[in-house]
Image 1 (cartoon, rainbow, N blue to C red):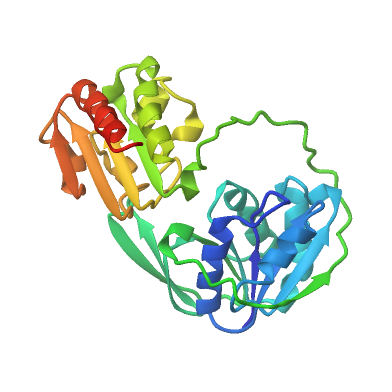
Image 2: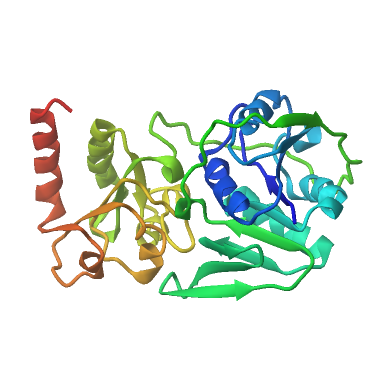
Length: 313
C-alpha cells in the first residue's frame, strides 16, 4: 500500500503545494515515495528528501521533463506505477494536465481535489462549488488522486530520505514545448501568498486596479480577481480566484467590490480571515466575511491606503 507523490517544482525549488500534499500522502498509510521529474533539478530532489514521512525520492533528470508536459510525465509515471497502489499530485494546473492521462493509461478512475483522507481508500472532496462534501470510497487496485493542497498543513522538513536516480522513458514525441510568456511580478504568487487582495466587477475598470495594487504592495500581498472582473477584461485570467480559477487559502483575504457568487466563494472561503468591502449590504460575500464594510470602495480603499501609511506600511 505505497504511494507515489509526483512533485510540482520549477526545477529549482519544491512548491508549497507539494509539501502540503505530502501530508495527505502520509495519511494514506504505507511508504511514501516522491517523484521529482525535471531538468537540472537535483536540488529539488534534495529538498523533497527532507519532507517528513517520505522514505524515498526518485529523481528523473532529463530535458523532456523540464516543463512537465503531460505526455512524457504520464509515460514515466506509468512505467513506475506497478509498485504503487496510489499515484497522487497537487491539484494544480500541472496536476490537472497530466493526471487524467495517467488515470486513463492505468485504466482507473481519478479522484479529484481531495480535502481529507479518511483511510487509504476513502476520501472527501468538495462538490457543487464547495457547498457539499462528498465522501468517496474506491475498491480499485490503482488510485489516481489530485490533492487540494490548501486543505492540508505542510509536513515538517525534518526527514532524510534516500534519493535514487532513475532513467527517463523514451520520448514519444507526442508533444513539444514551444515557448511561454510569463507575467513578471515582485508580488508573491497567488496560490501561496499569505495575504490576497482581490477586486471584482465593482472596480468598474482595469484602470482602477492600481488602487488595489498599492494596498497589496504595502501588505506584501498578491492581487486576485473574481471571474466577472477577468471576463470584463479588467485583469489577466491568471488573477482569477474561484471554482474555475485558482483556489487560495491565505491568512487574510480582502475582497473589494466582489459580490460573492458561489463560484468565487469556492476558491477562497477557506481563508483564515476574510474582509469584504462592498456598497451592497445584501451582497453574499458578507455571509462568509469575518469583517465587512458597507461602503463605496472608491472612498474606502484610499482611506485604507492612508491608514496603512500612518502605521509605516
